[in-house]
Image (cartoon, rainbow, N blue to C red; front, side):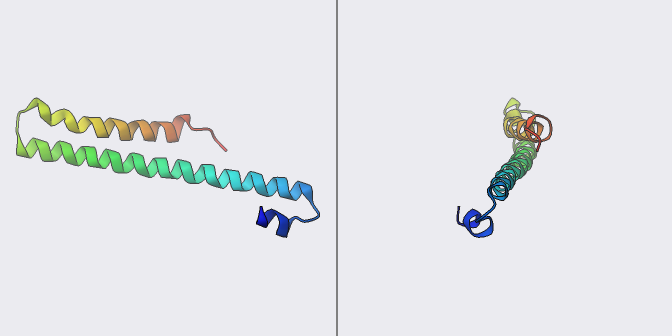
Length: 86
């Protein structure tokens, strides 16, 4: 609100434009955070798969690493295909 008062004291249209730009920036940060979270979660899942495969070979419990991989994939699918565009 302080930025709006300082930069657009006499121009109400400028204030509305500034608010829209701030909202776009917040949405962009949120989507980028989801992308990063999806990548990290997928990488942890892949690491878990490899770790469990080497520690306990031929065990069905090795597939537990698929859970974080699929969660990370869901984040990435949302970010790239389902999230609202600017």
